[in-house]
Image (cartoon, rainbow, N blue to C red):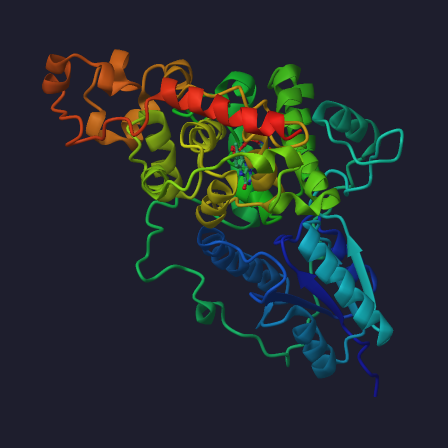
Length: 480
Ligand code: FAD
């Protein structure tokens, strides 16, 4: 009788795909049976995914299970402490190796290192690869050996050094022992039910959905990306962020396809370069947080922790609900709540409004985004919030206060975006759509709008709020 070789545990986390998956490819190369597992670990230590992320996870796990089934395998689901569940699987199956694609968020990275250390002591082989970034943190460092704190030289160094891994589709057949028990994703209640607020989520999570989103962008938005990415009323950006966050496609595949579109003459090279640079912010943000883990809770530039933030519960609630009286801000916050996503230009405007016009701590905004974004990503979210708050490494200066009215007029000139998300003022002519409080009484009347009744008056005066923010900045400057 021949004994079956011990299986390799393939520990899926935020790499929910079969193509271009280094851990899967290495597991397949061993020629041994593979146990694909996802562990739903909501214990302390690593920041728990927010509600919108869990919505996504629910669908992406089902899609991954379907893809595995098509290759003769399946996804084994377990919930509980990650190390405990891995040990249980090892005991149940005799597995003697755990392969994974690494997570680089500091807490997850430290937890995985502890698990690897403990399992290795017990004779289990534990191996990890980079399957999520163009370059693993530490892969490019400055001349003096430190991490990059400025984006442009970081990206230049990355593009000079990092190379695309070869494109792989993964094994056609995956041999998985049939006897291992799995929990059911339905029992995890990841999809909201009390109430189900996800009716406006228009997404197709999973590897196939990610490929479709990429093809769609290559044939439409990419050719005018540099301008289109700033027009929230038009579909000008890729909407790949949640797919990238959950690892449903490899960022190098995106870069290759975008560059191919340029080399085939389908899009101008400058548009492809612009897109690749934006994608680079993802690597930059993740490596920054990896090297400076305290950034989740404290300002990268410590003097910014002296900022005299206000506790303005009313203002914070108005911001969350999209009832500030500034149409572009309200449109963004409602798009976020309804779809789990917000356009990048508008993210900047609403974030600036929170930390400058309302003088509310960026950490509050970061937490709200964390719960409501389908693409909530620790590195990207924390770095971008600190970028707006002026406290990140390569930040927009705090004194650059976005004016929501002029930003709206510039980037949503025809008011398409605002009219879609703030329908109560849709009948206003373009001239006043971004500043209804400046419209003459008869214009408001003709549009059927009573300010303060159908739509709020501005909760702060932007000019006064800007002066107050600049005064607050003096506290920071003094504490340097
Ligand atoms: P595209 O313009 O098509 O860009 C392609 C990809 O590049 C994106 O999918 C994303 O992975 C990456 N990218 C683009 N811009 C940035 C950026 N500024 N920083 C980091 N990566 C970028 N992005 C997240 O993925 N998760 C977050 O939690 C997140 N929080 C943010 C919070 C604030 C306050 C701000 C201002 C931005 C935040 N971003 C975040 C960055 C950016 O808004 C989104 O990545 C982008 O809007 C996603 O849409 P897209 O895929 O169509 O982008």
